[in-house]
Amino acid sequence: MDVRKMPKGIDAATLKRWLHDGSEIALFDVREHGQYGEGHPFYAVPLPYSVLERDVGRLAPNRRVRVVVYDSGDGDDGPAARAAARLETLGYASVHVLEGGTRAWQDAGFVLFKGVNVPSKAFGELVEQVAHTPHISAQTLLQWQQSDTPPVVLDGRPLGEYRTMNIPGASCCPNGELAYRIDAFVPDAQTPIVINCAGRTRSIIGAQTLLDLGIRNPVYALENGTQGWFLADLPLERGQQRGYPADLRPQPARVAAARALAERAGVEWVHADTVRDWTKADDRTLYLCDVRTPEEFAANTLPGAQHAPGGQLQQATDQYIGVRNARIVLFDDDGIRAPVTASWLRQLGHEAWVLEGGLHSGLALADTRIPEPAALPLVDGDTLAQRLAAGSQSVVDLRTSAAWLAAHIPGSVWSIRPRLAATLAQCEQAVTFVVDDPRIAAWAVSDLAGGEGHTFSVLDGGFAAWPAGGWRVETDAVADVLPPSARIDYLFFTHDRHAGNKAASREYLSWELGLLGQLDELERSAFRPLTRVVAAPE
Image 1 (cartoon, rainbow, N blue to C red):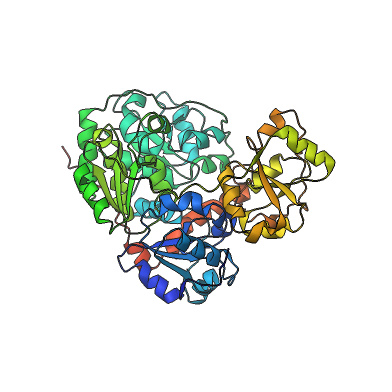
Image 2: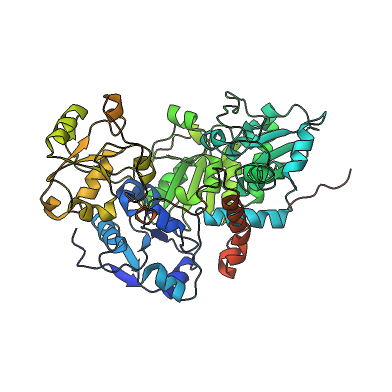
């Protein structure tokens, strides 16, 4: 890719001013995930260069929005320059590069935040401070569970996270489903309810959701979640499937409470015709988000909607919303989940609306995804094995480094788009890529001037096709083959906190607790948490 014509550069002070001027802006960290997690500006959204085309149409659907990309300050050949050039060819009209990247940002006196989903996690800590969300310790929960009146324990994470480890006896009910499904879990108005997650944020937000809805039961957040339980030397369950019930009818009282909560947070309802007018004007970024479960989304949704389950949209907003100060329209089919989620987004500082009529509104938006790349030729496992035996073939694995380390084709090498040219310099002329999404390989190859003298193909069916065909895999990769410094896609920051490392768990919890103190006044004032409503004595 020709990057000699550099996009417009801006300095750190200008970027800081833009982030708080009230206009739309997308700040994209185009480094890989591990690099992003080691330090980034507060409002940065991760958009790794390796998957840029796959995700940018969803994260920044309006090509006219202000876009700023950055890297570590790697110069003209870094991912920021390449990403900016690529965005311009894709039709983005206002692309800028942060001069000097994260180094310049820090040199200007601005904070770099470690970890991921930082705004949502900092907000959770603020909610606990402002609303005084009740919490209990792991030891207290254990005592309650062993009593004659045990509490209902609900895990506010998605099922995939819940299965990795959970509090014994807890059921999975993601935070976005709590307001809708709580009556199916709780037998009466006296049973205590305890909400937990892996750490702190979703425990706090889940418990506060029920309190803000006026649930009569005593409600508590489990302090420090499953990590607090583990640090108290208590056993965790693994591989559980206790989930939420399906096919519920929304209770009118819950619908009314959800609407009242949303209105209290400043949420408004919008008709499909108004949304259509917004899209015709094309002067603002618009997101249409289906906040229901994965199963419901797969069965039926509105054209142009992205799946953004309510609990995750609150917890990991930057995985769904790439533009600050954009319009976010949420919908469901029950009148509960979208208003509750919208109330949290409003408190987080976003302009969130609820679509009148929801799934049945008739709204349809255009697809904003980037056009598909020209596909690379496919090669089956038998042919690849024959070529490898003949010594005329190289295999480059573009999956995650974690996946490659877990199992890979013998003789293959791991690489990633920003480093692909250097990898290919050590390869045979014929190269086959192993990748979960063949488009990732095609987009990576598009960077190469004339293909660097190679011919390319993709293993048909991805890595799974290799063991399925009976071919041997390697699972014993050693660290010096792929040292941590090479794994730019993997965030090592407290990475083994769920694998029995108590020091990593303590470090992670300390990081969460310290986030709020790192915010400056502008960042903190963008949040609008509701104060807790205390009922008058009867």
